[in-house]
Length: 408
Ligand SMILES: NC(=O)c1ccc[n+]([C@@H]2O[C@H](COP(=O)([O-])OP(=O)(O)OC[C@H]3O[C@@H](n4cnc5c(N)ncnc54)[C@H](O)[C@@H]3O)[C@@H](O)[C@H]2O)c1
Image 1: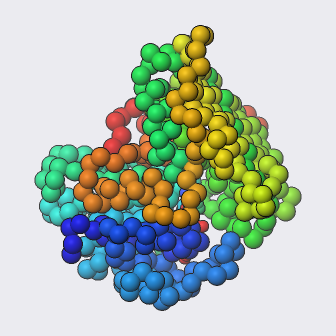
Image 2: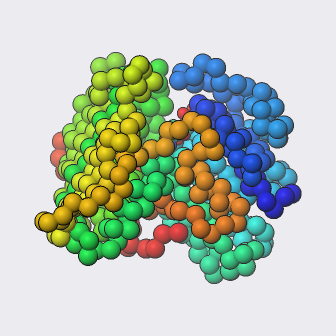
């Protein structure tokens, strides 16, 4: 086993892993894909009829072993030697599989074996109770490490969600500015919207994972699929300053798939902060069309002393910028607009690079999407769907989030 390479197990080898994570991992010289896990021998997806079989994927990935479950992986030599697990299975499986991996990570710490780092696909879960339990578990994982303090290099285990927009430089600058209260003062209001050219995705009944609720979900569609990214960005950037409490939301739906296509939500947060969140997939065009059409995103965060503006089209960096406005000035903090990193070429987005840095034992990586960001996003989305169903304002479910604990 080479110390200079990250040994990564990819769990869930469907559309996103085959089209995105695995090609990126293979472009990183310092990565070995040490195992592949999928419960089926031939992954399938309506979004790509050409997914390869696990046998073919094994060959592509340097003949690493293939397993049909995380339990099987954890019993194997490859599972014992991996230092990173990239979890890319359907939403409903995230809690259980992440729990198994964290348990393995805790056992490793107690046995003074190398850490296990985890990058989990978004959304963290689609169930508030599971999100709360996972958030608590991540803390236990972190605490076990701090208390025993016996891991190789005093590093802490990495657990982040793959909200790639949160790992961009613009998110880092915006977060630093908000944490430095003097710049915009106390946050009073947030106005955010996202319009995506994705009616083809959410309007088609075949795209089950995007359109059909599973488990305790009251609905599925644009809010879970897209607004989850915008919420995660806002909750990352604003940190503890914005804690949601009550949500009123109305949605409209596709006649063909039943998915929610648009929503308008009013979120009331602690300290009387008002937050307006709008979203729709009905932006005309297609990101793979000619010409390609990107997502239109707008975030305005208003404070007592100034406001932070970040808006643009995610296919055109020149279309927007991050700026700080006060009564007398407009200061450009970043002169390009970048949201989710959808670059298919190269070594992968900043979120993947941050995960790989942790797996390689470095400590200088960014943390853009913690379990607390995931939990607050899921609580908000859950309340949005409940509010649409009840027609009334709904309280955020789960209360422990307001403890405002430090997040690893
Ligand atoms: N970050 C992003 O922008 C982004 C984009 C697309 C998808 N995603 C996320 O990636 C995840 C996967 O999405 P997808 O479109 O690739 O789904 P998919 O259904 O195409 O692939 C999931 C794979 O996981 C396998 N699987 C299911 N349960 C399993 C289990 N218990 N153990 C092992 N394998 C199991 C399935 O057989 C399937 O091959 C989802 O959570 C999705 O939201 C994120």
